[in-house]
Length: 175
Image (cartoon, rainbow, N blue to C red; front, side):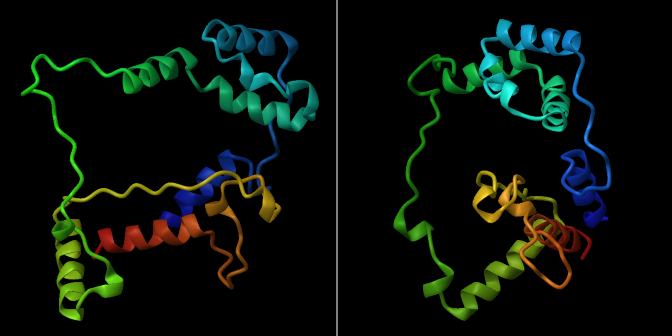
């Protein structure tokens, strides 16, 4: 199941070779999309449009047509400019955790590691945790235009790092 989800994402990004790249959009479709992004002040996403080939234009168009740049601007503005709290007491305070609240597996006792592992599995079973899997930029230095987590690192299974993580998460959820 996790493998199917990963493959579905890779196919939508045209990274598997199974689905041909979309055709270059018509000049009219491109102009409508350019106008939409220009109106939102995001026309820079087309800065290299003249330098890319037809297949790349088709893939870029397919990605951008599904994004609402006005909505992106709105949520970015809200994230960067949160409303002022009504009173000083109402403002949530963010403070660094005390040293006693942090630990490392490198200098922890085996009993602590086992306890944390068991508690972690219990929290997962009770749906009390979430997974946020993030990756750096593209793997261009690795010879790939995909995110580094999609790169084939030469495992016998030919699974990407993202697929391995997704499968581990899926297995834990179904323990």
